[in-house]
Amino acid sequence: MLVAQISDIHASPDSPSLLTFERAIDWLKAFRPDALVLTGDLVDDGWQQGYRQIAESLHVLDFPTYILPGNGDDQSVMRAELAEVGNWADPSRPMHFQAAFNDATVIGVDVTVAGQSHGDIRPHLSWLKSTLADVATPFLLFMHQPPFGIGIEVLDQVGCRNDDALLELLNALGSPPLGILCGHVHRPVSSRVGLIALQTCGSLCPPNPLLLGDRADLPVLDASSFLVHEVTNDRLLSHVVSMQTLAGA
Image (cartoon, rainbow, N blue to C red):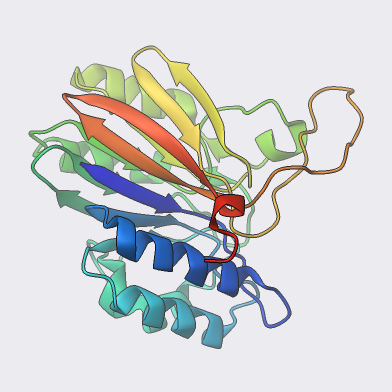
């Protein structure tokens, strides 16, 4: 099973990010994953036309799409413009999703907190526990803010809070996810907690610098990127697709 993940487009009228998104979508049309997950921060400042253009690009795909909001999204505009492609579990509740495939189940938890840059998993643990009770296959857990530190202090301050409560729930169930897959930090970062792979997706807007400890703030050499997750025999492999490789596409 192949699940593509795109995050942090941050589309705006004066940004080329939508063009980058369209190039990524053209590549995915030919690649044909089993599903596409968008993990938030699609549009800046509630730009309605940006959401509309993203919806138009997703409409033409012949595989399902699942969408989470980020802290920068206007959820009311997002719901209105992406209603036909969002596949949310309940239109009147947080923008969670759940979908079962032959090899894996994909679950998305909307951990955003209104008016804040950080996320919080605690209010959604009961929904997640109830959802996981019916899951019979290995699963991938998506959210916007990562519930683990990435080593960049300014970004760790606005991650997803109450990660310990999340890990307690997952460990109690006895069947942890193959991976917790996030966005928000505009860099691909990988880690692990026990058997659980932790991964953030790069952004389609310009990446953030690698600000580790007291190291110098060096120029960003990274390209915009997205991920392709492969689930085979209960094993997760995550591949970075650099947009530099799509130049001229």
